[in-house]
Image (cartoon, rainbow, N blue to C red):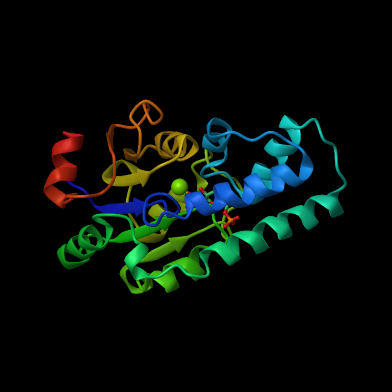
Length: 217
Ligand code: B16
Ligand code: MG
């Protein structure tokens, strides 16, 4: 398979910020008296801030005003930003810097496809912004994963067809988004959770262009 581009999810693929989202949502759910488990958290991965809050409110059978919802989202994001304050280049997940470097040197365009509205801030903290030919994040899409909009926009900006690009995702919603958009998808995480991906790896340790081709053939 000829690979024309790679599109990366950010939280949970490039950097372990997924645990900070979990911690902040957990804190918010606790403050609302809503029980919140790791299994429920899987349903929030890749999902926008507003849709994540709606799910938590639904689990707690809570109905709140629009103003209150904005207040809660701002609070969650304030806590999240406190947690990510210390993020630095050494916090990139295993294999990520090496793989991004190889793609860049091979001239394979790299795009970001993240639901996060904090993506640019985090890529800056990691010092890898210049490796990305396009960054599509939560500020640029209207529809949250599992809708494919984030990846379709990335492919369009790179001028490539979805079928010739590979998406790397850690979330069920993200794998579904990649599939719905017609992309090949390598899941990063637990094969039992990401069973709809074309292939699943625990992390990007040892990932390379040839390994990616082997996994997808
Ligand atoms: P923010 P990704 C997603 O990022 C996270 O997986 C998800 O947990 C989070 O709610 C969402 O971004 C929005 O993030 O609150 O920073 O805008 O995995 O698509 O890179
Ligand atoms: Mg993710």
